[in-house]
Each structure stands twice: as C-alpha cells, then as structure tokens.
Length: 214
Image (cartoon, rainbow, N blue to C red; front, side, top):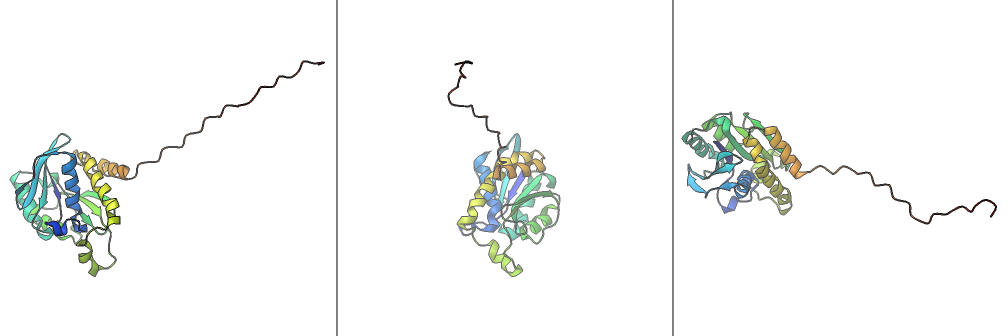
C-alpha cells in the first residue's frame, strides 16, 4: 500500500497556478490508471486505486499549501503507511521549467508545503520535484508561484504531468532511477539511428562489344 500526494491550493482560482503542478500531476494519474471516485477525507480529496499491481491512495490536501501536513500526516497514520512509502509531488522554483528530480528525504528548501509535511510526517518520504523556474528575485517568488501557467508554458506542463502519470508504476515499484529515465524518454525520445541508404541499382542499357574484325 502506498500514499501518493500532490500539492496545491484548492479552488478554481488556483487551478492553473504554477504552485498547483502537483495537483495537475496526480489528476493526470487518476485519469490514466484505475481509481475509484474521489471522496473527501482528512481535509483532502482522496482516491483509491491500483497502479501496476500496487494498491495506492492518492491525496490532494484541501488545507491550502502551507498546511499540507494537516492532511498528509493523519492519512498516513490512519492507513499505517510509513513515511518511506509516501511520495509527494510538488513545484520547485530552483529547477528549470519541465525538469524533474526525485529523492528520498531532505529539507524543505523554503517550500512551505514541504515544511508542513516534514513537521507532521518526518523527513523520510519521497520527493518528486517538478521544475517551474525562478522569477529571478526573491521578492517575486510568491506572486510567481500564484500566477497561472501561460498558454506557452502549458505546452510543456501537460506533457510533463502526463509523462509522470505514465511512468509512475516504476516509482511505485521502488525504481526511482527508472522512473526519472522513463519520464525523460517520453518527453524527448531518442532520434532513430541513421540507416545507410541501399546501394542504388544501376539502370540503363547494357552495351555488347562487337566481335573482333567486324
């Protein structure tokens, strides 16, 4: 049994905010895999289903980002899911747009949602960071993450969240390296190797030399 968490802020106003890319990723997962109807529990939207052969709970806290741990901690404790079997997907301003990094444990790097989960769950859960880029100055970070993705940005956001959903069975199977590699290959498949062209057949008329003396 695993708990997969997407972070964001609730409500239509925040639906396409950069801060909500974690919600977007788990919504893509729900569309792709077999999950039962979403219900409200633990101050969150909760869905149960299967990814590969694993039973999974997907959680989207509705507490607003800064209090995400108020939903994640109680859900993990109720289902007796240890922190090392929890994965949290969220936005990362210190990664270039469209980049992905996965690791277990670590600090919050100033992310208030992660800081809240650390306080309620500990540090040993998996962190799936999706890059949204940095606005360039510290004072611009808050308005940046609360702005909607532009139409041009959605051209990489949608493929990224779909790729995360498609590759998720590998992360669930304890293969974070394989998960990251598959996401990268989905987004940028290798170019086919150049094939040597076949040697063209000679075309034309065969000439017969005349017999000697003619």
